[in-house]
Image (spheres, rainbow, N blue to C red):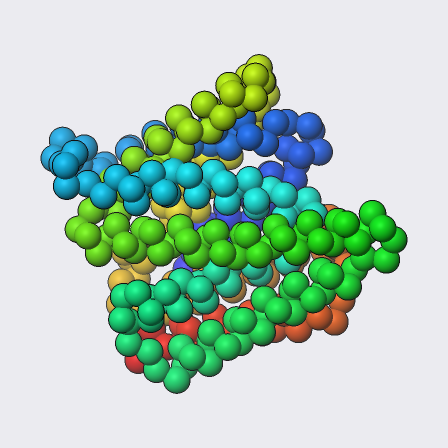
Length: 289
């Protein structure tokens, strides 16, 4: 359980750190680029992917390239959502991306569903709707209304984007490609693509952004590594790992948003939080059946 708590802490810390980088005027795009340098190095050291037997012809490069484009794009959207919508709503949207992932598994991979999965998906969709409605109702003045529209867009992109990453990784696994190998290749290509974009925009590299990105990548990978390790140690209890991780992240995100960033919780936000926890519990219970 300690690993799950640590993984959840690192997940929320990434969000807090992104907001800190924004406050310090650190270039987010450059930080995202260098985040993948650290993540790829940690991934190679921790998971030890088998590069030696990589088949260039058999590798589904279109999936790897798609991941390399989606990963930094969604990281950018995450940073924007945190600034426009806050930590609480962003964490709920991020965690409930599992709803779209499950729907895709049902449609694309013919995964078997039971009534608890359908109920969990319905509750998850209700939570997402509450998050979006709560955000849209926060705007009173014109600047607030504009911020609300941007926040709604960013939350939707975070929700869809993280589900897309999960679907692409599952598809890679279904083709027989090692999880750690596909992840590492995606990290390397993501750094190359973002770096090219930075140079295209004729921006000079910020030393502060490089160090911030390396730290960000370390925090982000720690979240992934600890979560995978928890699944390995509790391989007979995947539901516990899934539910604990997601609920801890939502609750810690709530505490961080309210206590650190003084975010206000409206009725719809509270409803979204309750729906999200209920959805995650239903989905976790469905895993055991």
